[in-house]
Structure formats: C-alpha cells, structure tokens
Length: 300
Image 1: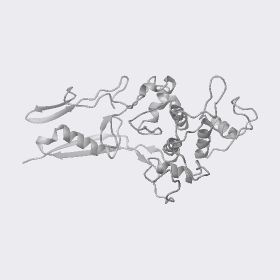
Image 2: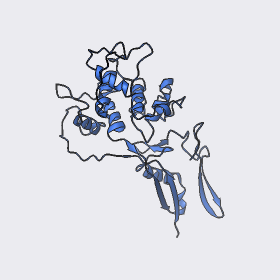
Image 3: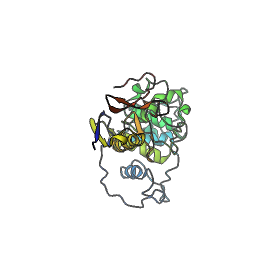
C-alpha cells in the first residue's frame, strides 16, 4: 500500500484581526444584544470606546437605523479627530447650530463625506449600506482605487441592485483584506437598504479598530489513499479545511461549510461541466481544476 502526497503552495492573502480580543466585558450590558448576537463583540467594543451608546431604557436596538450625521459622528469619534467649526457651513442643510455640525464638518475636512449635487447633506436621512461602504472606503484611503470599477464584483445576492456610482466601493468593501461590509442572511448585499446600528458597529470595528492585515505564504500538504485523493469529496473537504484558516480571493467558505467563488472567480469547478477532471499521465492519476476569472483580471 502506498500513499500519494499532494503538496500545494498557495500565495494567499491572510486575513487575521490585528487586535486581540482579550478584554473582559460586562455580560448582559444590553438585554437585546446577547453574547450569541452576530455583532456582540463589535457592539461591545464600540460602546467601550465611547463611539456608540445605548438608549435610556438600557437597550441598544441593534436593528435600528443610523442617520448620515450619526454615522459621520461615529467615524470622527472612532478616528479621534480634532473637531473643527468653520464659520461658513459646507452644506446648506447642516447649519452651525445643528448638533452634528462640528462632526460633519470634521468628516468633510478629513475627506470622508460628500454631499449631494444640490449642496445638501441630508443629515437626518438613514445612511444606505452602499453609502456606508463609500464612507468606509474613504476612511481607508481607497476611493481612487474604487473608481476603477465600472461594475460591482461581489459574489452575493442583489449585486444588480448596487447603484453605478457605488460599484467600486461596494466591491472593495467585501474584499478579504478590507471586509467593512457584512452580508445579510441569504448572502444579501442589500446596498440600498438603511444600515443598522449593528452593521455600523461592525464596519467601524473592521475598518478602524481592528482591520484585517496581509500575510505571506501557506504550504498545504494533503495525504490520502490513491483512490480517494482525486475524488470530489476529498477536494471539497480539503478546500473546506484550508478555508477555515484563511480566506483566499479565489474561493471562500460560508459558515455552514458551503464553498463558493470569491470576487475574482466566476465558477465552482465540477465534473459535470469539465472544469474538474481526473486523468492519467505516465501511469499516475492527476486532477485538473479550471477556474474562469472575471473579465479584465489576471492570475498572479
């Protein structure tokens, strides 16, 4: 009996949080945000940092919407920017007497927010998820990079709902080394929906408090019996194990273990369409996997 070893060297983008989650937080801080809530640690950290507060009744209301001026305020607090108060308002609907004036103007000076063509900011309007993406991409200094995209490149439901102006910012917001926009249940992008307080906490945590960082190289060795090494089930299992540690741009993994293409790839290789093939060469079994990249992209 002999065993074949399949060694694969992957030059991947490693995605690890910079900060260690080692603080002890008071349990039950908010009755409507349990430890099982998907945004629990993001919300808790934002509250600890003084970026977001709860309501007088002791709740946090994670599903409540956030206005444009509220999110601008959160960002200014998260970045610890020095407040400015210019004599002349930038927007005609954000006067010097408005509570958010200094925060909005500070965000403008930092280059984070822009208004509408009519000279307004619409401070009381709920911030849409694609607007949230735009602001966070500006915070990260990647607005120019976002302008290179004419269509959104995201493997999620509702990609056709992304407005043309937001194609680049939404694409970058989901990129593995950025991750400032979450998917809603069912992998929904929901770009035009108002962002919730929980989602804003997530975005600020990922974009300002503990952003992902780039890593180097991973070497993966898979050892299996010859008759199972090249099976689809083994390939999927191996990919799942790899993706549980790192998220590559080519293939990703849902929490339930389902594999799906990343931003760069159009297909999941399978035997049916010939993108996954097993063949023999010099008496040895080999497997060929074919990925189709999106137009304009090159493999590196």
